[in-house]
Amino acid sequence: MSDKMAMDVLHSTQVVIEQALQRLGYQQDMIELLKEPIRVLTVRIPVRMDDGATRIFTGYRSQHNDAVGPTKGGVRFHPMVSENEVKALSIWMSLKCGIADLPYGGGKGGVICDPRTMSFRELERLSRGYVRAVSQIVGPNKDIPAPDVMTNSQIMAWMMDEYSRIREFDSPGFITGKPIVLGGSKGRETATARGVVIMIEEALRLRGIPVKGARIAIQGFGNAGSYLAKFMHEAGSCVVGISDVHGALYNKDGLDIEYLLDRRDSFGNVTNLFKQTMTNEELLELDCDVLVPAAIENQITGENASRIQASIIVEAANGPTTLEATRMLSDKGVLLIPDVLASAGGVIVSYFEWVQNNQGYYWSEQEVDDKLRLMMIRGFEHVYDIHRTRGVDMRLAAYMAGIRKLAEAVRFRGWV
Ligand code: NAD
Image (cartoon, rainbow, N blue to C red):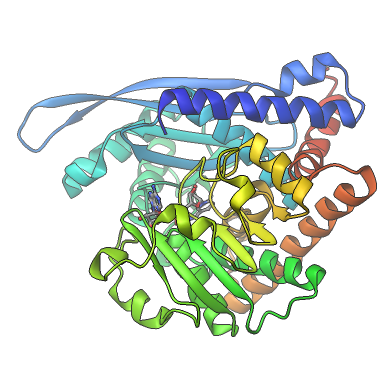
């Protein structure tokens, strides 16, 4: 996201953190501490490029708070990475971990680069250089990275190898999202989508709509959106619309999801192969039961919120709905499952990967899925209960659920 947008996102996050802590009865000192990360490191990474020249990349690692335990969160490689972006994302990770009751605080990192223009070996050198640059503040019991935008299991493998060389012992618990042969967890790749499916099922149940035949529209057909479309289609729901950066496809009787999955490219693009039947903006306003933004931030705003027809919105993407739109949708009676709850499946299975690495004993995919379901449902029930009993919208309820354990840990440690 642009730096201007990152500043806005950070500011909105801080506004809701403040409201949540006030509702929980905390004073200004706690708010001051938890509104900002405790540690943000900026690093410069020299990388020898294939043509012999050296390029210097800028990277970041933000650690929101480690009162509960080590911090945890992805590393993204993207040209628009900024300090404000990683700061906001590290706070969101604290909230996700808090809602799921994981023994972690939030972290996030990134490098300003464009992996689409770099060779395999240049990417390897950058990944190893990043780990060397941040090695003092990360580690299996300090801060545990994971994949994020444009980083993958290969990059996690290089990073794990580099960290193990620096420490001179094998350290699979240093990073999650690794290939299975290096200690990755079964079920990690589909975890975010599985978690979103569980949230959709819970929301439909509350609204008395059967999963079979429920009409779903999904913005984004990447890792999160495409697996989600597959799982909902398999469950008998009717996926009426999907979209990607190029446009959207719509069929009121349901799209042929298997065919679309077969044709999509590795960046999650498919609509450019067909005559697009609607725009991304129209997809958001479709007459359907469940709308899932699973692409980028700031898609549902004060401008289009009044035209949204879905009665349930489940945020698979990070930050797709502005605070103004959240208020408008909540007033309209839309059931909104916020990002910090809905997309927590990825970090939950990352936690399972770390637990398996630490104990050296590995679980079946069924075991992973069953444990994920339990944690997602527990998180949902907790947030929904706060929403009902405290009379706050679902986003504020999620922030209250997410920040409470962290604030308590800070208080017990005597930091505030
Ligand atoms: P991805 O890169 O695999 O796919 C992104 C999809 O969004 C692609 O289909 C792309 O074409 C589409 N897209 C990009 N710009 C768009 C635009 N302007 N309008 C419409 N569509 C657009 O990404 P992903 O991993 O599926 O992540 C999607 C969202 O979910 C992100 O916000 C991410 O932070 C969030 N998320 C993902 C995970 C995960 O495990 N993948 C976990 C938590 C949160």
